Image (tube, rainbow, N blue to C red; front, side, top):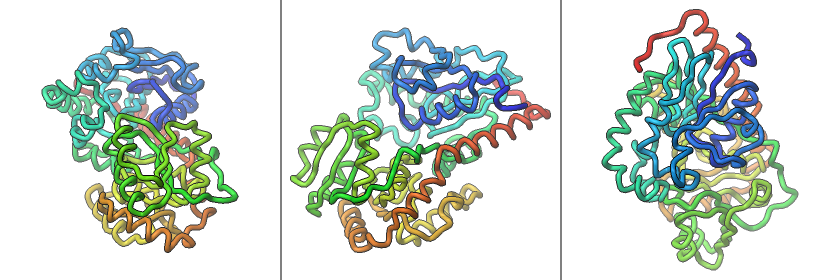
Length: 409
């Protein structure tokens, strides 16, 4: 079966803005030009034209009061809502999920592949961080402890409805194995490397960008650069805005939100991107490298699969441990060459970050902008589309040859 001929349903948690998950969905739309989209909620005009032009079917969440701005309040209803979609007549269901999209009920004759950004963090290993970060509405925050166990049971049970998992990183694949007891293929998400360029000159500032949430650890960067008395430019907004501004010294500059074009320009001219949080993949470091700029990052999570640190001894030990746990070789296709693209610090402390910045300034001539950009291209959207198309094609052929299996409801 040719992919373009397949009758496909794309399931996405919600459509309220263009973030990393929506960039993946955009690629899925181009891979399957006739696919329908099913989602809990859609705010018209919030996503790209490629997505907006599709037939988009929403759930009962769309009709609830204040759902456009307060949809996270309805988290306890999400599992029930996503199970109400009728998906008869499709050859393939491709769910794109960090919440409940993978929990749809596929018909017995339909293959279900789940592209997973992360197991639902707010009920698993980062519940406390998400509650503290304000990413839950007040009602959901209040009742989350009471319903988390029920949501975890549902989250595990519905994995039987997924025929194959695809993870965005080996870090996420490990969490899928730990929480769900399932194996996952790994296909890194797409990065629009063509949007970025190497600047003719760089300016004397370091850059941090992202939502102002506790788990992003922007406070760590501010404290470190207060001590270093180096210029730090911060792009973003969020619930920690007042606290972060209050702790910032005279060398810290807040720009608020900026357009994609402006962020690309800031990335191209910074001395280095500072990335102090722990992420499942982390597209921003790859975008920085596409600008030829090094990354100073906390050496845990998906960044260990995208950035080549100056000193790889600690990273190699971590990757060896992950390889043993997954029986996989994480990231080797992207970390084979020896040209460094960044520096890691392995403790989320001010002192560790200060030392990493000092090391960078002593070693800045070790980073070749053209080599960094070439490395970033290994995560380009074209690579993603080729790999995901090949993987889906193989799974569809297996299914067609008799790989169907009975699933519980």
